Image 1 (tube, rainbow over the protein chains, first blue to last red):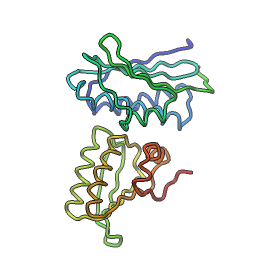
Image 2: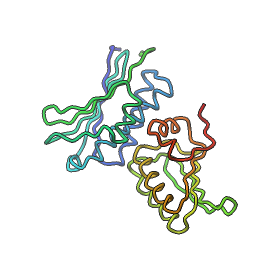
Image 3: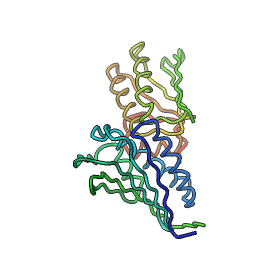
Length: 130
Length: 109
């Protein structure tokens, strides 16, 4: 097996599917052998990132958003992206962002080629990835 | 785990006992809020929330409880959470809501 793997998910912008993102996040994080508390952190952060996107009124006209789980030996990096026509106001004080920042090692939001991207990462100090 | 909410009036403690099970997220937090607000409208009492079977709550669920708290404060009543799982206690701490709600029987630490 290679040193990195990628899992891609496309979900409708619909609150009913946030649980699907959570389940996938748990399963993927478990594969990297994060401990139970870390898996829970990743699951919660992914769920909050989805909620953040679904709640933004400017995305309500879009059909779906993408989640990419990038697994490497020392971290899990998760990219959430949604098509975006213009720059979106980001409020770091929002509870979703507050939770993500507290649970993950890094988080970033950017705009690239008509896409709103949120990148969150958790590092792994003792990976065994077989 | 499927979300469910059950409530009953406790004569002994003169409060609403609410049991929430499963996962509370953006999909069902509004439904949860409506049900609890209806109880307060029926009779304004303290709210005790049993969380033994609450597997998950997200920021919209916490936001719903803040809205409920505002309502209970109009009647000088409080919200108590009991038996929160450690992972959920952590969320209350991160968001400083452990200072806003009364958390009892915390199995954390």
